[in-house]
Image 1 (spheres, rainbow, N blue to C red):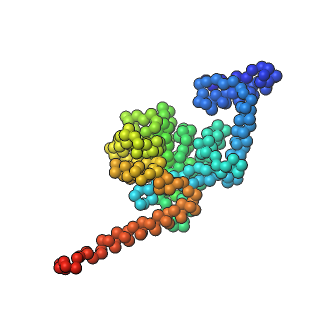
Image 2: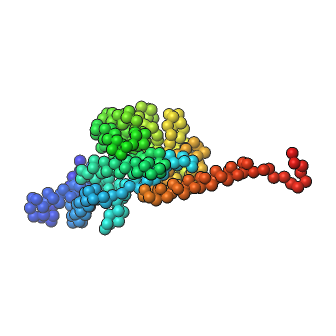
Length: 330
């Protein structure tokens, strides 16, 4: 239970005013996690007005194209494994709004389905555009919230989005958190299986941070695991993080699942992960999330570097052996 309390006469002289103030206090209690009570404070009114304005601005951004997607590469060696689509809202007055705040706001005001559809279609549209222009991006990953998996119509909406943009199921990966996948509601698992049966890959995001049940893991219809960045960032300093990372990679190998490591920021992290069999890496060491045009430039640069490395290897392989002047030629 979340409880908001307003006091007469300090917070209002009539029932409507008191209820409005109590409602603001209750919203604050919910924002802090629920299962608590909060008394109304004057600053809550300003917060409520700010939230109301932000909700209005989000509706306008959804309608008028004020949102954007950035794409972060996932690399398997020197080859592009795929890209993850990440939401960005460059608010005209407030600057960049945190994606977590955008999603939370959308969920509170009933805009999450519309926001999710926009992200899905924009990611598919961009991938189709890349394909049409010969930009080699194998697939795009899109994050989905818990409520999306409660919707039995999700699989068909995914297929409709792919068809609209001329894509195949293998072009899309749906990322969901492990707490969603291990939720007690059977509808979640049913929807996930329906998505997988249509040939769309499922990625288990933030693996290792929730309440994983290894007994249930083998039953989940997933194609890959994403190692959470909280493990990766401590690899250099924590023996526990190294041990847990190694354990996750060992479990994934046993299940035949590839692992994508998020948050790779240093060469030492990269080296440890590769030495322990993690083939796909994602993080600022490789590239930050980029707008579509900047990602294309990054891919061209990466391809040029790969060609130069290959040419150097070929030259070294076919170069004649060096001999000292006095040594006989065989």
